[in-house]
Amino acid sequence: MNKAQLVEAIADKMGGRQQAADAVDHVLDAIVRAVVAGERVSVTGFGSFEKVDRPARYARNPQTGERVRVKKTSVPRFRAGQGFKDLVSGSKKLPRGGEVSVKKAPKGSLTGAASATVKKAAAKKTTAKKATGAARKTTTAATAKKTTAKKTTGAAAAKKTTATAKKTAAKKTTATAKKTAAKKAPAKKVTAKKAPAKKSTARKAAAKKTATR
Image 1 (cartoon, rainbow, N blue to C red):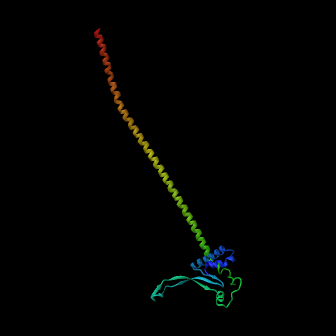
Image 2 (cartoon, rainbow, N blue to C red; image 1 turned 180 degrees about the horizontal axis):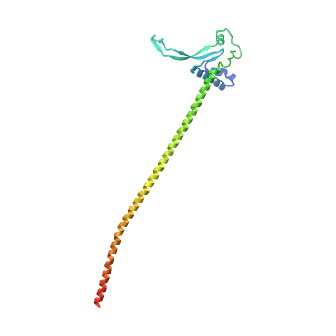
Image 3 (cartoon, helix red, strand yellow; image 1 turned 45 degrees about the vertical axis):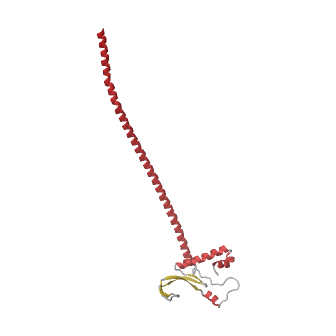
């Protein structure tokens, strides 16, 4: 029997195939997580699951017969309960209809380790999600600050450029005005000097008229 067949076997009792598949997945997940964490999962009358540490040792390659060193490792182990053993050995008979009668587990014998492990795993996932959300918010805020800083720097640079342009334009205008004024000033002086010449010409004309008379 594989997992799919197991799901089909309990589908009618669970109210549907999807409910049965979810139940099998949750049970297996809880057992695996507890054993990986080094805890022992015990179901009275059925058996127990636990993690066993194997020290480093030497073994032989079955093909070549060469001696090989095996590193230290950990393996899962299942030990069948007495009720399970009795049913398999035939000392007890399976009921024709209904479920196999297995002793009920006392309070705390099963739920303590497995449920605690499941709760820890759920808490870790929640913490990881919160941390990820906080990191995203921090990254977004930092990006917004950088964008604002760039805009502020750009505005300041634009202001400096405008101020520099205004100063340059003012300097050019002032210099142009000064040059124009300097060019016009000598022309007025020359005109002022020529005026006396006109007066002397008028005097000469008056003198001529007097002499003629």
